[in-house]
Length: 628
Image (cartoon, rainbow, N blue to C red; front, side, top):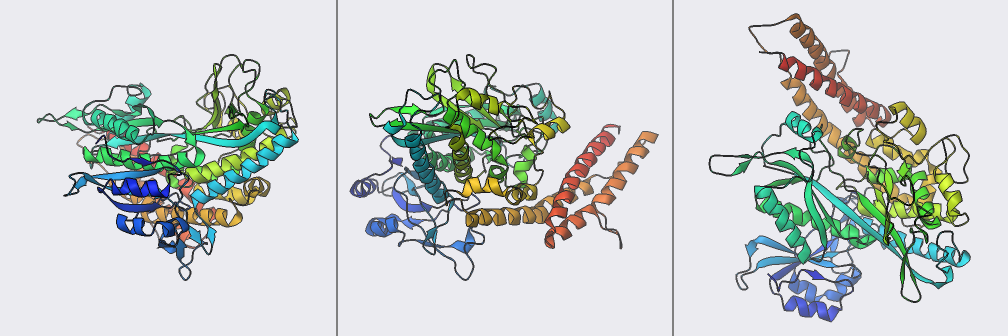
């Protein structure tokens, strides 16, 4: 497949596009990839001859329309005004998705579909996630160029004259984690938890079908120019077994794949396509892939650490990392870097809803699994020796010998976070911090970021601390963490409420006009609808099934402990799932409050339900283990 067409580079000439597509008749379809507020990408099959004949209409958005009521544009598109146009985006790479299970009879090659990233336009306005990020970056760039002209010399960046800056670049990269398992086979959670604690899996050698699929993924993705940096075993999993025929069974492993950074829009597009390729390659070998944040409760979840960078291009064509300080052994970063970091941290309450918008996301964000729960950063113990703290929300990554490597890593994201909206929110918040930071020295900014709770600062909040070089989970109690770094939301509703509770912080995100109140409202309404629906239709029924399975066990030997444990279990089962005429079960009360729109009470009941379910599972496990 060496001469296959995998990628059409950004801004490829229209005539060259036609030439390439005609030279590759195995590419039979075009699919426009618009991304809604939930991060879902559209996919349809349009015969290639229609695209070639009406290419100008595809560019303008006149060629393809979709029913906007069928995607997540809550409050923007209504059922009586549902038409959404889909103009294509020529400024990013287009990828060809090959179906390895369907071959073209004439060419003998797998049939390909050209995937073209697109925008969604309703009533003449762009209303999709891709456009929010595109327009946000345009605004932030213009504001930064103004700041540099007004402040030509910025602390830590004295080697650059702000008046010489011609352009600003925004770079990003994501790391993809996922679980791989044999379809329909149940995992042994206790065994895998022990393997995880004993660190038997991380960087372990892959075997059999998993090794083959991982190697195939890396090779396949490199054909598209992703520049894969590595693929490896993550912390979760257990060793597979081999049946009589030599086949591997009971496969259940966690994998990570990393690839090279790109500009922010391209990075978000790349992530969607990489997930597609990974899923298809593993499926072709008979393995099921899960990108859920927490596929199995009690085991490591899937993160997607998101890296954020910013660079200036001067008139001489040179590229300068704006986060790197001129003297990296003296300063952790430049004033621009400090400002961006402080903007992210100060405004994180209104960034977090985009990062964690599902029940699944909150299942992952628990202390003890290296998942961040506190709004706090780490810079390293000294500027001379970069270090890494894996317990914080966002950290500074740097290499003394490579100024281009300086960036931030946001550790809270998961594979289903909407990267477009996350990046739009981060860069908006970063600008808010930078606007203050350019007026201060790096020493003043380090002191501000390192201030203690209760100290008055010129930008950060007085009653909060924002930096810790300690282990956030081990060196602080839960109460200390909440007091120093703010109490984290526990449910989707609590997270979405932060938009209302923090109007000034929300203003920092909406200043550019792209991430506006309409978009935030649409995102919030869709997230709450999914939160409510999943609880009613999936989570409560799944928990009810667990309650039903916790049954009394007959044994010829019973003790007073057995009777005591079963009595506690029985009472807990009834409290969770059994209604009386006057007293309703926890499940019923949660469902009714959700249906009636009493979301605050429903949120509290959801938290209680999770606590009671964990208590029930723990008690029943002890009860079962005492039976002989």
